[in-house]
Length: 394
Image (cartoon, rainbow, N blue to C red; front, side, top):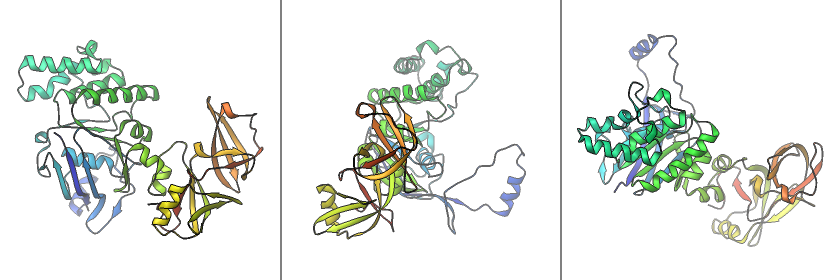
């Protein structure tokens, strides 16, 4: 069993004292300076993570996703024991782990930069942690070769890392982690150094891997495609706070706020200044002279929240926006041919809009300067408060 609970976890980096600042000035001039972005400044110091609570089930694959500086890697490092926890509790299998040394947490971590020993062969890299535990030689050999078979790197066991490609090195790093059969596998942006083709291949390999080993995964990425394809649930973070937790489909279909709506989905969601009109128990959105009634399930949620007529930010995904005979008038600025579809970049009253048109539905070509009309259905419209940015349905 490997249930993980993070209860109101907080991470604060204290202010640096005058003496420490002097020490830092003695660093070599060529050493890059680390910068923290999007972090809250308080009297205690710089807050990197705040009010982070999450229950992770046994064998669940959780993905932490968000922009750079949102606190996702810091959270992962607190689980690993590489960062001290400033507040809250980390519980693994019912035991509080705040003050437990990393080596005693029964976790394994795969880093972004592989972190392989260059002077060791692939075999010795994978066997290293088992040798430190004084595991019998025959058991080490069995575990290393089993992991190599799973990851299809048996033929590279006698090579050194410099003789491997990026994708092969990452497989070795993953193999080194899984030979230990950890309760929790932590992965910190393991695919970010790979090219697009290799990333796609390695994503598929990680999906296969989690089906073959019995462990809990916590995976950090800034790539929403990885989050959507890998995670049982995804945790979207911003500025140290959790914005939404849900399955990939839940956060795509029901974003809790404007940030989540704009972060999840590619191309990004179209946003408009619009009006929400309540007429009895019915709700309509008005945009550019077009009035669309919302779907019954959306109306039911808005009624439950007693939402009234008001100015809103309307969100509609490009794949849910249609070119129509009648609708909001716009001008074509760019038509991108993507093979199975065309991405139309439109200008509607100074607002950039993207519409995805399947090529099978096209009746002709689109040229710069063409006038087209777009519309949308009431079941795909998302209504956000102008004041709070929250989805008015939830």
